[in-house]
Length: 177
Image 1 (tube, helix red, strand yellow):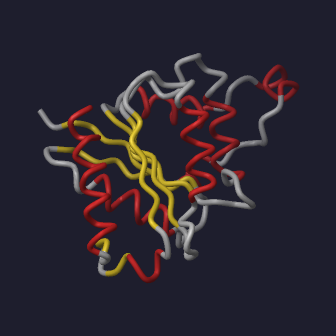
Image 2 (cartoon, one colour; image 1 turned 135 degrees about the horizontal axis):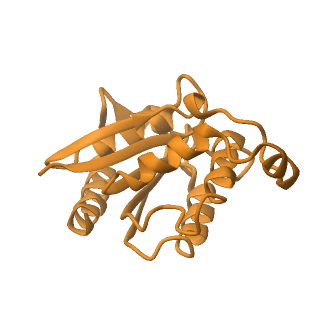
């Protein structure tokens, strides 16, 4: 039976390089059925306890959480906005964390980041990894791709050293699924 992989770029940009990287990574997984999300489809009011008390959890948050629960593994590639998560991702995280304690359904996770710069979103990837290890007891693998426009062309990682690193991380992730 094919494994269900939920993948998304943690950005609401219509030209997100992180969405491209998440799609690429998820589609490298053998015997997988990939669902690629667009965070724009899950835009909700900014989370606040008063808003939650007044209107409850938005249906879009419930639907997003259900997709996580229905998956066997998650691939998320983080855009770095001012050294942290994008507001679009953080808002979804805030809402889905109110649904139940097990935010990520204890799924194995492949956390990625990329940027046009040489650090490849490594700051946001570190933030996510440090936060998610307390939210998920399953395997969490990570990979940062620096200089996206130089190292990712024609839907593949072009730098041999980075491709080798990615493939090693991907192999470990696949073994955890």
